[in-house]
Image 1: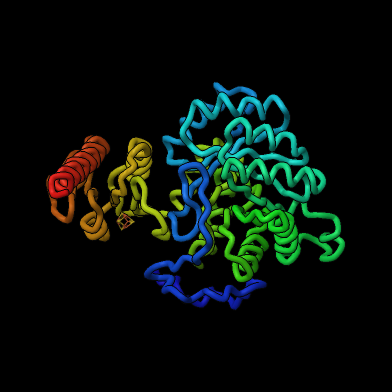
Image 2 (image 1 turned 180 degrees about the vertical axis):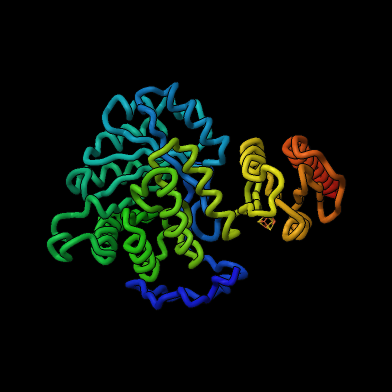
Length: 397
Ligand code: SF4
């Protein structure tokens, strides 16, 4: 506390300033930019739909069993769209089997070869990630676009600072936000000339400020829905921080319709981090929100171990539930009362709170089990209530 607006803040201006910044009160609610809507399988993207969470399999797409196994884990974590690398014919053909094994929308990621795009479309993919400027000549792009039109599937134009066209690098010197945005509009023009607008766009760089500036610039000029992400963000630790800062800025300004957190880690972690980012600024609510104190000289129980154990054991909960794990009676009871359920520690013990009421004192070694049990009870109560509500509405129809 006491850091907001403190003397450590320096005057700092990002290269580009969004025109719609400040429409909403950042501290109360986020006003999302209205983009046009596209549909990817069963998921709506843009036009006010919830920000969809994506990840990308790192299995060999030619191995449907391993890929489906990973897709299942991603789905359990809350992933809503899965991207698959399609490096060759065999991978493109394997999409058919993968398609039959999952209901999650699948996007085929294709570079350089339009035939792989045609095969992936034939095999039932729900979307393509291609850059029309690099999959072949105009006729070849037209063939791919026609196949997408016939099947009603969208295309993501995925511009990456690391693979910008030569003429743009010569014009701008290096991958500036302006160069990235110009590249995107070049690809968009190719599709629009073929009367194709079922498109979303990404403008990624590994540099956070370049990425933010590119998305802001694009967002001022266009209402195509945006897939946001920081490219090659790094490991679980550093990539989480870079993605949280970059995507947090964009989401807080209302920019972003679907997102991927790119991590050098298990893709399931990408999904966990994505939801933590979305939850932290209340763009979406899913799963347990842990409030835990940093511990200090007053802590008399193992709060670090308890918070980690509770977080791990409750990772599969989908309902939005706030759980407080607090070390003492200074801030503990206050936070614990505001949460759905929580504990405030004492000397080898913890007071259990639920919906603002003190329930009971427990021994330290019982606390993890007690919190998990209380969360499970809340989930059950909510499920029963919603079943009763839906039975009532059926009767009144
Ligand atoms: Fe210290 Fe208590 Fe605050 Fe935890 S809640 S950091 S134990 S004062």
